[in-house]
Length: 87
Image (cartoon, rainbow, N blue to C red; front, side):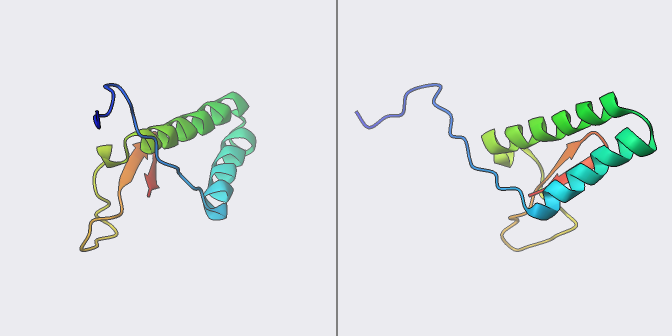
């Protein structure tokens, strides 16, 4: 009565900007074509989207982004391999 069932997880919606998609595509293209590592590029893009899935599941898991200080501490950053995902 009025209680949430145990194990019910809230998943948040993550909206990626066009700029984010462009950046991911540029990272992938650089690794695949400039470095000649197409399989590595696929693995890196998969890792980025897997990290985005974790952000959707547990957004407060990652620390505040110190490069963008705000009073409400609304920006956070997640490290994914060599890149930060700021949200």
